[in-house]
Length: 364
Length: 129
Image 1 (cartoon, chains in turn green, red):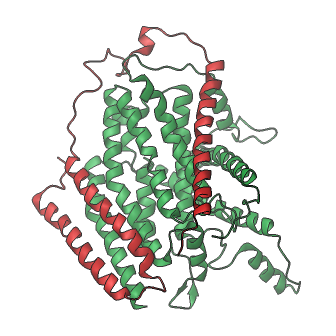
Image 2: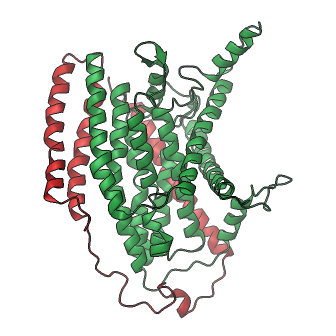
Image 3: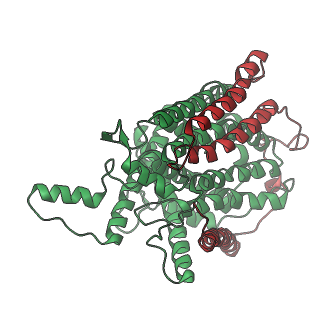
């Protein structure tokens, strides 16, 4: 495996740098997603959303979530007498930590990744579904009927939508012939439709992308699949009994999950750090300046990496925007509709998709 | 592809370090909360929430698990997708001597697993009632 830009000769230093970057990314990216949810949803509903809290002179509510965090830190920690105290307190951590761990394997720019694991896709999918365990722990330990119902719905949803998610990703693995996330991004740069047109996997794998995106909405309990926390039916599902910092952790886990699953979708289907199919940002800049007669520039690997990170972030937050857009657009499904949609439409479609891709791959 | 053991341990060592960092992060936030929070608990505050009324019975009441059969199907299909991954990696591999044979065997396997779906549909198992 090629070492990345974050791999230094000293093992201790590279681990320290990686941990620092991952924790920093983990503490900021979900806040951006949360801010987007506040503002995008507000504007789509023809209102302003948070306007006052700001960071320095920048207002428009950019500091809202930071202020919320400061408030949550000061709130009383209430554990109901009927609840199972240990499981109740551990659940937010179990929901939160997997999202942080997945970020280690996500390639954000050329050479800029935590670890390029040989089983990257597998690792990312496996670890990101551990979060649901935190939801189930919270649901059961609350000793609340609404929480329990929410937990049962969450479990049903996980069971139904884990498969479309994995099948959509498996088709990409089949196409790229590797499980490493970095190699999958590179494979998309080399990919040509009919040997001619360079394209990301999103076009030949349109069905896989659709399956993956829909299933990730379900996995995150995002509308239109938010029956586990349906506030008009079961208060707030597994979060009914939670307050203060523990509640904040569940919300943070949701936003971190949005970022992580959007990032996995970006890497698998949308070409990662390539700004156009097969074209990186430095190449694009050199094309443009060559058009004006200027010579090609040399880009330092770190600069090229950071430009790539910008592109990846743009794609990730576009997907996050779509997730918020869905929330403003679609009404909630019913539990039986959700199950039927998965077992009768999405899973057969996913299997068929794999068969078609496999046949095309072997015959080509 | 040969497994490079030192790199392997180093990579998963970083994963382990990040898991520990995550646990420390959660513990630190809880500790910070302990420093700043008020503590004024009384009976009503600590009772189970049930729309403002006193809770009836226990929260761990029995509920109908309608998706019990779905759970079995999930196990079948989840194991199936586990089989698909290694197959998918090596199907398009340049060193693969018999890609058509590999494709054929997987098609047979997929056929026998997927045939269960229409069968279950016909039996009415996929109805959520």
